[in-house]
Length: 87
Image 1: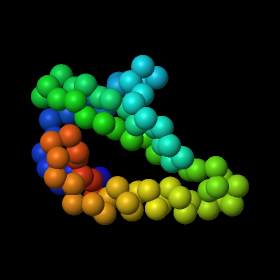
Image 2: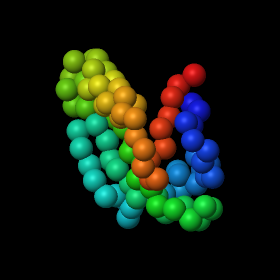
Image 3: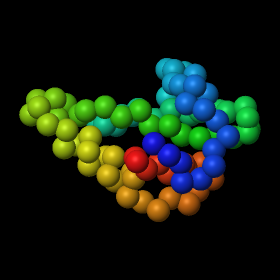
């Protein structure tokens, strides 16, 4: 994956914030966490995705792929959003 914009944090910085005390939302395809980063000082939301119950029952990944396409399809211009593309 490569970022559309320069980011000043690593995946390790983000993974350190993936804990129950930082949960700010939950849905059918994932949990949203608050990630407070030190360098540069910023607060971002991180969504950890998983297959939905419907995907598990049908053996497909339709809901998960729809969520990835939805999140990746927006032209997000916000200081707390980092767009990613797979290469």
